[in-house]
Length: 432
Image (cartoon, rainbow, N blue to C red; front, side, top):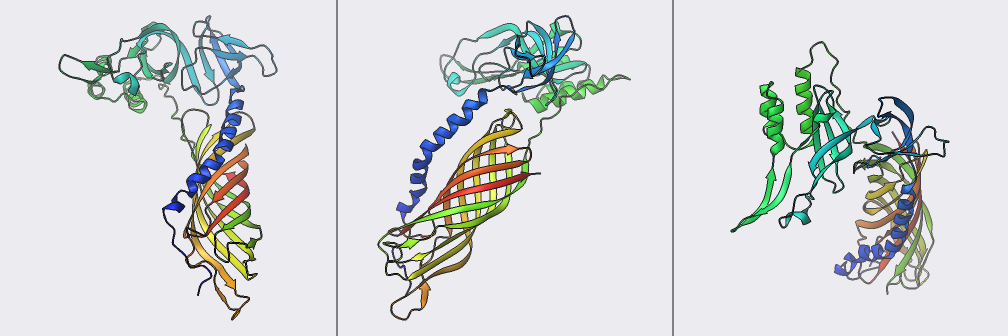
């Protein structure tokens, strides 16, 4: 006869992870405000600007790895200099960031900057054009240069020009718009850029043929310009190709300790009126960080696989000793924000974990009455434990230090008798 034989897990237990989420939402909102408030701080990196006279000036630029092209940059001649100079595209010819190797130039370009998001594609809208000086980022240089520009509506534009002729900078026209007539309406895609490129590369038929159906994507256009520029090189310097930005995927190992406390609730002997000691258990595993976006690794999907233990020793209501000892393999995925500046970079993260039982070392209650023999304390313990995770930490070079809270639905799979585990964890990671 087991110490716990009651109704199996039902739909009610499904909502426990949701209830845990509701409990920690206020804490996460505070964390989000904290980590975003420091993101407005400066990030000056070595750079060179080229003024309107063609002279170079070395110093430091407040680099933001801009998703939207900057309307101006902030520049210092030295990090200790209190004076900050601001330059727009009308004030300088170009600026170059040392790390990552990124060059932006100033060009006067006429382009269609009409919004092309989902909301703007539900009805016809009046086209909006911009004809002004802007900073555009270099992708390829050679016989023809290729640039990229992202406008205030997060719409990406690709621009080309003949080498040495900045006045020839031209937008490669790609339009997505809602059009309608008297009988019907729908979304239209205009691919004028394909004809522009076919004409531009007409003296190299194989490239011109590819241009007639090339996709409006960075990799496709870079490959096209690179192939054409190589064909024009005769005893000349190889054309420049902007280095492919690395995905920045990082692998590492992690270890730490988990400080666990248990709340048993329910009518059963080992739940109602019982008492259990807190425990400390090891954590050891590996992780994989996958950055996304162009924000200097600020946003990361942090994935973990690690070993952990849950040990709960205590006494049931009738003073019978209870010993529970389970080993788990946990797989976690967390959304992480990392402050991008400095040697010491704080971060915050939130996510979920799924833990699979790999070993049941102890699951017993020793009856103090009757035979005094040991029987199962929990009849058929839960095989999958779910956790809500939230943490704060810092990155220091290749090391990470994190304090984390984990709230899980425990090892009991019963409706009327449940276990809530609150874990406070200290974790150290090392990135290769």
